[in-house]
Image (cartoon, rainbow, N blue to C red; front, top):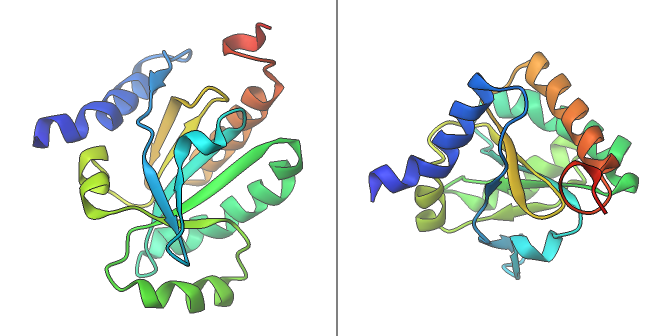
Length: 169
C-alpha cells in the first residue's frame, strides 16, 4: 500500500518538475470533516477551483503559509476560488484557538488517518490545486514565496477557464 500512497502526489510532483503544461490527474473524492465533525466530500466543491492545503498547528512553515492562503482566499474567493485548509494534527482541540489567534476565515477540515496515508501526505505544508472538474493540476510541497506566487497565478488562470480544460465550453 505504501507505493500506492505516493502514486498521485508523487506523480504530480514529477509533472511539476518536468513540464510547464502538466497533465491533469484525477484526484480522489475524499471525505472531509469540518470542525463540528460534519462530513463533506471533495466532489461537493466541483465547479470551483480548489486549493487543498494540508497543515498542522505545530508546523512553522504552515504558520507562514496560512496567512498567505488567507490572502489568496480573500482576493479570489469571490471569483470562485475555494481554499480548504485540511489539518493533520493529532490533537485537534488545538485547532480552533489556533484559527482564532491567526485570524483565519478559511474553511478548516480534517481527514481520517487512512485517507491522509493513502494520499501520501508526508510533508507539510502540502498544497494541491484542483481545476473546476476536480482534477489535480499541480502540487506544492513545503512553503516558499515563489510557490505562493505560482499558486496565485495558476489559480487565476484556472478561474478564467470556462467549463472543462483550457477554457473549452
